[in-house]
Amino acid sequence: MAEILSGTNLAQTIRAELKEKTEEMKKQGTVPGLAVILVGEDPASKVYVRNKTKACEEIGFYHEQYNLPASISEAEILDLVDTLNHSEKIHGILIQAPLPKGLDFKNIINHIDPDKDVDAFHPYNVGQIMIGDFEFLPCTPAGVMELIHSSGVSVEGKNCVVVGRSNIVGKPQAMLLLKENGTVTVCHSRTPNLADYTRNADILVSAVGKAELITGDMIKPGAVVIDVGMNRNEEGKLVGDVDFATAEPVVGYITPVPGGVGPMTITMLMKNTLRAAQKWAKKKNL
Ligand code: NDP
Image (cartoon, rainbow, N blue to C red; front, side, top):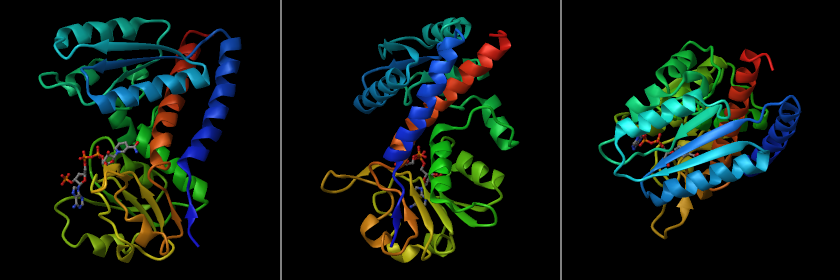
């Protein structure tokens, strides 16, 4: 029988640990602080930002939220980032993606002090991930690794297949699996016969954004299957990339959607913020 890897439960455990560590830090005089910048009125982004500030409150972080109009200029956002880069109260800065048209996400990210880049999107941090010497792990792939670890299955020597090659999930995911000595294959929209690859995967991570793309017949019996996808199916229900009904009887371990990778992503953001605050305190000899 398949074991369900619950991101909700794992996130709760990790958040409790982060809360404890935050209380210890506060006793030493540092309150970890996160700034979240939301530009425009995208409803999904508003929900993500609300969940991030809620998580800050739960763990005990200081937080600032900036709701900026879509008409704001890039120069004004860069000014704000500069101010936050120099703020003693803020240790992590997050720009909620996507930005409205006309604003260059990459340029704004490049402006964040890499020590405060808790999403790990700055080219410096991306490079660190590439060479396997990282301070911050990108949040979603880091959450996926925690879920894999929670299964007790070691990545070392396993055939790992990542479906999707985006800069925020697929590519860094491949690096993290490689760092743990997996043999990694990355598939994408130009991969012919996807099933030929997925059927060989001991560990399968799907980050595509296509409802029920991966069906049970495409999965190796006993595999660890991590479903990053978040899609609405024809009935408007939130589903992953993996067709849970046909996959569950085949897999060894599987994450549900919702309640799998989603809760872990924000938790990893919190972990990065705490790490950023610890680094800052060390620099200040606190
Ligand atoms: P992107 O759209 O940036 O990337 C999707 C990737 O899937 C691309 O590399 C694309 O290939 C590939 N792809 C598209 N169609 C196919 C196909 N038929 N077969 C194989 N590969 C295909 O998406 P993201 O990486 O940002 O997100 C992926 C999914 O994960 C989305 O559903 C998103 O909502 C979800 N997500 C969930 C998070 C969470 O916390 N749970 C966090 C982040 C994302 P190509 O490069 O060739 O175009």
